[in-house]
Amino acid sequence: MINAEHKIKILEECDLLLKEAYEYSFPKRREKQLCYSVWKEAGIYKISTGYFIGVDWIEKKIKHTQVHPKLNFNKDREEIREVDYLKMLFGCLKHQETAKLIGDLVIVKWDDPQIEIDQKQDMLTPFIIIDFLNTAKKIVKKGLKKSYYKTTNKLNGRIKGKLLIKNTMNLHLSKGNVLQNICSYDEFGVDNLENRLLKKALEYVKHYMMSSPLMKGASAVSEMISYIAPAFENVSSKIEVSDIKQLKSNTLFKEYNEGIRLAKMILRRFAYNISSINSTKIPTPPFWIDMPLLFELHVLSLLKDAFQSDVSYHFSTYGNELDFILNSTDVKMVIDAKYIPSWKWKRDHENIRQVSGYARLKKVSEELGFESDRNIDCLIIYPDIETGFQNIDKEEFKNTLVPLKEYNGIYKLGVSIPLIV
Image 1: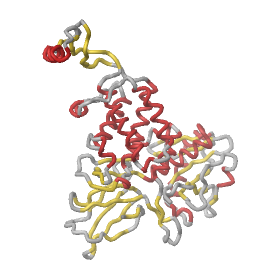
Image 2: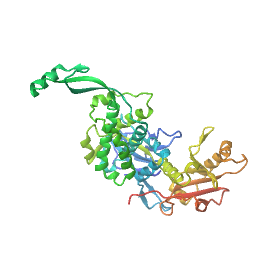
Image 3: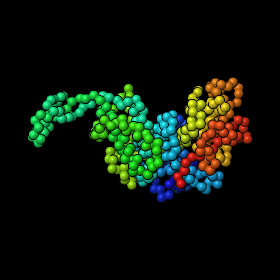
Image 4: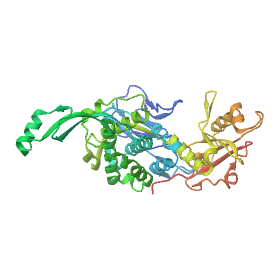
């Protein structure tokens, strides 16, 4: 098990035949951020990991690495605690602005060979499920798509569409009812292939919720299912694997395209077999989860709880993208979230220069209603499990900020993140 900290570890019993160093960067980041890198030094294989968690091949079908959400939270670097990333994820569901970004947290290498892991170490499935439910909720709010679809039914004393002669004759011979006909015809409604696929994936999600210990206590997820499920009452979940693979995207239905993509991922995740959800060992495609971004969304959720619409997320100007701008009546500042516990006991001057640079942008001054030559306060928020704030109090916010003595108008604030006990 490799700790999710930027720290070199020796790969024991590693029989890799690496000819050169190998590294993998998270592809959804604009700037290069390593998930891990591997190299050989003095006959010893070493690995360096970043703030990403996941499972990946170092050499395909020979050796893999699994990075867990563990961090050092004290100055002496003796205490290593495991972050409860699922509680952080569930907390992001409170606000639509954070919930819609959950898909940006994960990258999955579906085309690579799968890796067998313990189901209790399955970090990928909850992220896919929550992203799917969030998309399905949007679809339900707008109303299920109606279209023509092929259906086969028994009709009494009439014919509609194409008469299935062989099936009808078998019915007559077996039942003796010569008035009934089996016909295939097109019908307009919600019971189309797209909605059937969504319904099928929803059934997998329900089963997973009941059987997986990872999802216990996830009331926010259960509430989403309760909201979505009634809309699919008149939709069948009967759909063939061949139909699933043939479903194509439609540029007119953005949410449906995303919902179908995620539904396919869920079914593929369990090899189209709902019974595999209960397996103790499961195969997983290699994947990586962006913990710094998850912490960023966690902070956004806390800020939204306190300041609602006064918080702007990812304010962009001149190629720069700020984490947050707080523009309330009493507090106006630029805020950056850093998933770096060491901020509790030391300064990272590069982080300070970065947030200070954002505060000097003219467009930021205009957004906050300041003259361009005025210094804007800056805040860096970091994880602190010992004395960090579990909530942000709007009335006491100014009093909780810790000024950095070496700088003017630069503050820091530790916020609590959930841990696995």
